[in-house]
Every structure is written in structure tokens, then in C-alpha cells.
Image (cartoon, rainbow, N blue to C red; front, top):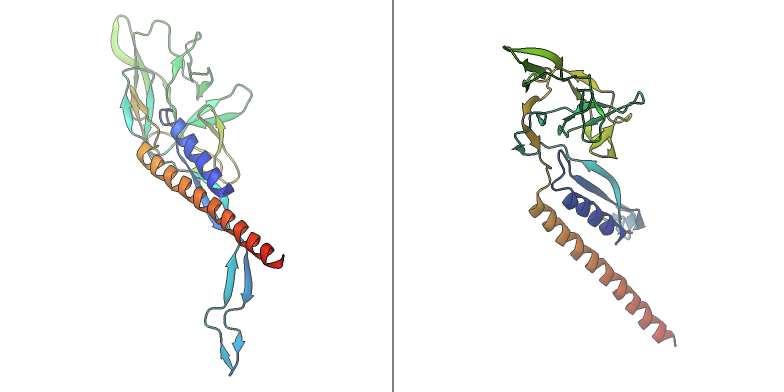
Length: 251
């Protein structure tokens, strides 16, 4: 029952984040618990024969781990010039201002009072890109080049380069909330790449990546988890009734 409760918690979190930009769904991995071996498979029987299967009784299940599924989410047009989505592998690198870095798939960027491109929480994109105050248009290419146009000059000028970080094992990243991830020993160290090169995805300006949660799939899994929970609670009730009958026999 505890296993199914944790499964329901994960499903509830997925559904709660169905509209969260760049969110990646969680999946619980479940494994069997210890088995009590009453008869060893292959043990000898009368007449110098052996048991073909033996006798083992399981003791339930537990959640062994949770995993983030980093499948691509749908790209939704927004029209905002600083909304940038990654189509393919990779993460945006974010400076926390303390010397630490976090990584995100959420490309809903904004411009702060200094002209720097930042997240909605004010954390600066790394490497930093500063937009001049007299810029009339911002252009982000698929290869990450950031260009602007200025009054009296129709030719765009490059002012920065957005790079993408990749990990050997993205599922090993640690979720920190606020759409941010931090590297771990399991994820491996990040590799900073230019978009479209060495397996890194390309950038799509004026788009945002939707959550990869499919509500219909989550509702089906929720129904299954609820029914499994009910059946497990029923087995406890049946076991209690059996013990009660044994107790009455003794009386």
C-alpha cells in the first residue's frame, strides 16, 4: 500500500505540472521485496528425485527509485522574442550568482534592468548576453547566435552566443525546483556545446517547450494505482478475518 501511495504522489505531481514549461514527468520504479524460501528449487525428494520449482513466498514490493523521463515536449509558439525552446538534447546553463550553476529546459527568458537575459526568477543566462538599450529587435538563431538591430542600421549585429549543456546521463540530474536541475556524480559533468553541434539540439525563438506529461496516460495510471491500493487493503482485511477465525477455533 505504501508503494502505491508513493506512485500516486508521483502521478499527482505530474498532473500538477502539466502546464509547467519544460517539465519532465517522473516515473516510479518498483521492485519485489525479500522472498522466504520454504523449499529450495532442485532440492532432493524421495526416490532420489528433485523438486522442479521449489517453494518461495514473497513479502511485497517497494519503490526502488524514481526517474525523470526527458522525452521532448511539444513546442508551443508564444510570439515573445526572448522565449527560446530547445528542440533536441541539452539544457540552458543558469548562473545562480554564487559561483554555482543550474540547468533548465525552461527558456522563458526576460530582460532585466541591466539588459542581461535572465530567467523569470532573475537568474542570469550563462554565458551572459547583454542587450543594448537602443536595440529595436532581438534575433536568436537556431545555432544560438544572438543578434540585434539598431536604429539606422538594418544589418543585424551579433552580441552573444547561447550555448547548450549536455550530460552523459540526464536522468541522474537532481531536481531542485523552479524548473532547475543540478549535476550529480550519476549525471556526470556537463559538456557545453554550440546548438546543432555534437548531438546538441537546436534553438527555436518565440517558442516554449510544454510539459511532456500526457494527462490521459496519467489518469489511466492513477486509476490503476488506486485499484491496486484497494486490492492490497482488501488482502489485509482478509488476513485479519482468517486470523480471527483461527482465534475463535482456539476458544
